[in-house]
Structures are given as C-alpha cells and as structure tokens.
Image: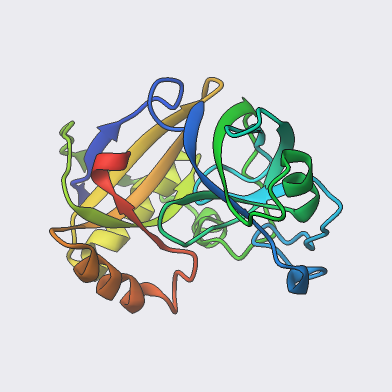
Length: 230
C-alpha cells in the first residue's frame, strides 16, 4: 500500500463575491497581425468574432464587458489566455473593441461580468490532459493536511482544473519536483468549482518572475499572481 503525503494550502474564494462575477481593470484588443493565429483554446483568432483572452476564466466562459467611460457593452466568449501586461484584465477581439468604442484609444477601463461558466474544454496542450490519462491505483491514498489562510506576496499560477483527483496528484508532484509551497485557489462560477494551482510564495515580484522563467518550458502559460489581488 502506498501512502502519499499531500500538504496543500487551501485558499477559499468565491467568484460571486471576490474574483470575477465582477472584475474591473484595463482592456486591450488584438493587433491585426494575429488574424488567423491559433489561440490557447485551439481556435483561430478572427477579428470579426466576439472573443477574448483572460488569464484564468475557463475556456467557453461568456462574459459581458462594459466600457466604464461610455457604458457601451459587448458579450464575448473566452477562448485564449492573457493579457500578460500588468494592469490589464482582458484582451478583446477587434470587433468587440469596436462595439465598446475604444479602438482609437487602444485601452479602456472596463467591468467584466460572468454570464455563463465555460466547460474548460480545449485543444490547448494543457497539463490537465496529461494528468487525466494517468490511471489511479486502487490502493493509492492521500493524507490531507489542509489549512485555510491568506497568503501574501506573489506566486506563479500553473493552471485551472476541475477534477479533484487530478488536482491532488498534480499538486503532490509539483511540491516534490520544485520544493515550493502549493496553494489551491477555489473559485466558484455559477455553482461550478474550479481549482487554480499556484506555486510558490515570493516576497517580491522579481523573484516570482525568475521562478516563472524556470517553468516556461514545461508550463508556457504560467503567469504571476499577486495574492492580495485574489
């Protein structure tokens, strides 16, 4: 019988009250050069479709974006990851930016409201696909040592998952491989739970960025999170 010790800090956050039932920040839009390029979900970017990139919302999530300067709105579907510029929360297709009336400005202050949670299904080579192919042994047990806490500083988010068994195995592997604290952020969108895996707890952003560079080859979509903003 094999017993694996699984020590993961658990951060409980409900999107309806904290994360992305309502989120505000800067919006940008795709440059014309990306027309026809594949997005992280596997779909090709088309400027005339109402789509967007978000750092963590599951693919297929439908959101309403409101331009706070003019109250114009657009409903878009998340099919890509990004933007990875500090302060920006969503990257919109050009047609969505036109509906919001900020193409000439380049950026806009917006509010994002989740309308419908996505399935998270994607053709993107996401780590969860590799994990889901592993057969769980009948005699494999996990001993949980869980605490609810409010972390400080910065971490590197590896991905967002739905299946708890994948979360347990992946988190244990990450902790063993990188010898870093693993934090699980629980998000609830329209009653559906998603688990964000964040690796490390760094005092400064440069230290977190240095660690992210170490992960780039294996986890190209990893990004920095500031715990106080979660």
